[in-house]
Length: 169
Image 1 (tube, rainbow, N blue to C red):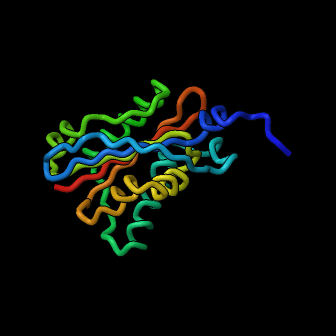
Image 2: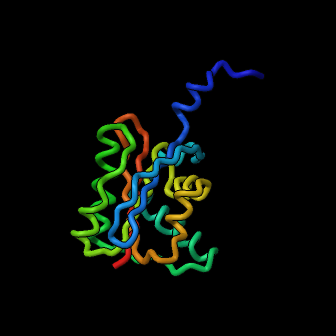
């Protein structure tokens, strides 16, 4: 059976991703990568921002372990920026990157990167989407990163927004 939903309508509802990386205190340009992924219907009602972020954190380290990378540790300074970014995107109902220079300075890092997404109904689904994109996958599996924070927030329309912030001292 054919669907009456147009391609542009489906694209408007599809989850989206974006990534950016800065290496060795030099901010590289912003790399935006679009992509689609899938979540699981029904999870949104029982998902909290904390559980969403915990799922994404665990799923990221699962991917790193599978690739024989060191597990990433939590960092309170990075967490403030990841949470703030997710909330800002949800409030504006728009996906965008934050400036990474201030994060590097405030958190005393030599390296920082960020993945952002919206439309995924769980942290696991967001990581699966990021892993399907070369730029996001590169951030997740970068062997030089040692720290990670994940923020998640739900917009007033129910859409989830998430931000991963990676770092190295």
